[in-house]
Each structure stands twice: as C-alpha cells, then as structure tokens.
Length: 218
Image (cartoon, rainbow, N blue to C red; front, side, top):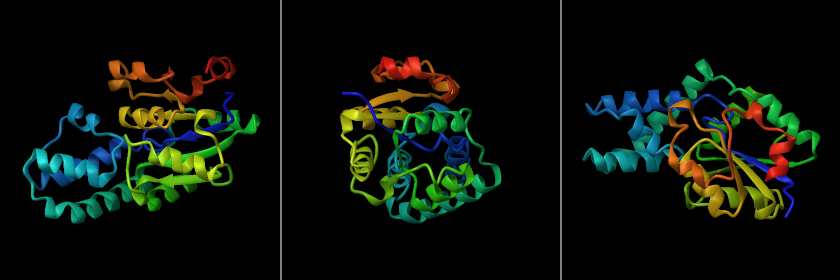
C-alpha cells in the first residue's frame, strides 16, 4: 500500500531534547547518590517518564512510592531546560516541507506529556502543519507498545500500513513496527551502530537526507 501519512516522534528527532532529559534525570538521581551511564540511559530512551523512573528505581532499590513526585520534578525541569536550551534538530524544516508538498497527513506521537509537546510545537512553529497529536502520557500503554502510534493514526483517519514513522529510539522503532507502519530511524551519533536498527525499514543520519528516492524505496 502506498504511504500517505507521516507520524513523527518528537524528543531527539525534532528537538534536541534528549541531552536535556538526561540532564534532568542525572540531577534527580544525584539526589539519591546514583548515576546512569550513557548506555543505561539509552536503553530506556523512548519510555514514558514514569516507566523510565520505575525501571531505574527498581534497579537502584529506590522506594517506588517516590516515583510520582520524581516524575513531576523531572518533567518540570525538562520544560525549563527546553525553554532555555532547546534547538531544532537538523532538517526539521526540510522534512515538514517535503511531506507538505506531497499532501501527506502529518501527526506527532510522543512519550512526552502534553505540556512539553505544546511547548515544542510552538517553538518549532509547526502547529499549523500537525493535524493530530498523541501523547503516550494520556493513554494506557507507552512505547514500545504501539498504542500511541495507532492512536495518532486513528485521529488522522489513516490506515496503519499507509503510515511512515520517523524515530530516534529503539523503543520507538519497536512501537512503530508493532503498529505495522514503515519506520525510518535517525539515531544519535553515539547509538548509530546499534544492531537493533536492523529492524527499521530505513536508517538515515539526519532528516535532511530524506528524499524522494528514499520515500519511493519504502
């Protein structure tokens, strides 16, 4: 089936926020005298904040009763950091223009809470181009479960097999593929050689590199 819908992840794909999420997480875990390695952090990238915290709280034997408060602290910290330091990832304007020129339906499917999504959408000036937004924070399951992608496709009245998704995390890629959608991954430089990317339909180094030939190959 020919694709006619594109759904974007947000953090680390459209906005350079993954280092800011890690900065906020590092500050939190420092209060418990714990520290995540870059590899540990990357393994849980794409999860909802509460699931990310639950995983590492169990790992470090931190009381799970503190997760809700910790989630609020981290999310508020990230919102402040994005306001101060957030920058578009390379190729954001290109990729939106590319699909707008082809009359694709455009959606956003993110693990982030609505407040952060709204902030980023405004910062990137893409509000008029995004026809549907799904936040995994408000549904039953987060990535790597496909629900957030299926929810976004439903809002767009799109058939999953006619959707192409752009992701930067393994958990996000798993979610997109589980939804039976095409998935283009744009990994961070430090994670670009991860063998897990072999499950993607296409891997590119930057959104700027996506073109008509690559679209036709999908």
